[in-house]
Amino acid sequence: MTTPAPPDSPQSAEGQADANPWAAPVPGQGEAPEQDGAAAPAPAPAPGEVPGGPYWQPYPALAPQPRNGLGIAAMVLGIVGALFGLAVILFWLAWLPSLLAVIFGGIGLSYARRGLATNRGMALAGVLLGVAGLLVSAGTGTFFAVRVHQVNEDRRAYEKAEHIRVEAAREQAAKERQQFEAAQAKERERQEAEQAKKAADEKARHLGFGESYTYEDGLKVTMAKPVPYVPSGGSGDIPDNTRIVEVRITVVNTGSEELSLYGSGAPFVKNTKGNLIYHVIDGSGRMKFIANDVAPGQDSSSVSAYALPNNGADPFYVEFHYGKGMNSKTVTWTGSAG
Image (cartoon, rainbow, N blue to C red):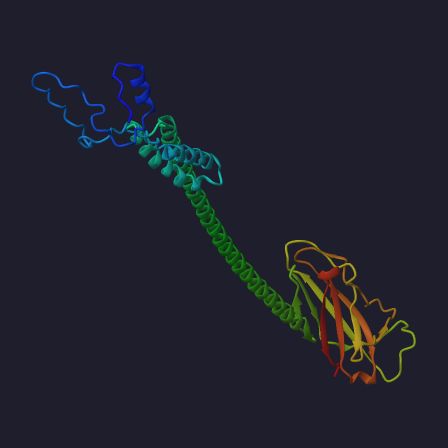
């Protein structure tokens, strides 16, 4: 058995250093020497310390980790929202990340104020970028909404103006069509009236012997009824079985201007087949032609003789031509000599 060394000896200190701290205490070892008089009261044990038990050195408490995730997310979302807001075709997507950046940044700033986060700058940047993204998104959306509204208004105004123009064009076309139809109807009426007038004039120019016709310029022409004519002074060879008659045509200028009858000096006498009848010319001096010019109020006559076939039993007609070109009109007298 080992004799314990005094407490102040080196051996005692070495022995204490080599002693097993986990071994049970030896009776009497480590006890303080008795002192005279009353012993001092022992100190109260520390909280959690078992009286008379071994002393445990407490471990240092771990420091809490900073909660920086929301600040980082706020800054990233703020950058994304700002970029989306600057992109013309993606501005409508900027509001969501920008709104989340403002929410996450606000929470991150509250964490930073309570000391739970260390990235206050990131959280603040996320809030500012989120607000900027929301403003840009709202401004761009408002601009596009106003622009779209303006475009729609312009389109509606254009469509309204186009509708008015089309309706005006339709009304104008309908009016022109009505005017055209009215003009056509008027023209048809004029043509019908002109044709009726021509037909009436044509009928009026087909006369019997002894009747008269007056031209538009005032020339009045009359054929006297045919009378027998006896040639004298040499008349050439007259066909057999014929009857010679006198044809007298008289013109009177009832107008106010002098009229030219050039080419109308003698009539044309034909049978019913349209063949010219033999013109008898003698030397009696009774034959004459209508004057080339007739003054207002004056008259002129033509006298001629014709040998009618079949002893004058067949009808014949006499034509008087007056006028030039398209204005030429023919008066026809039809009848028989008997």
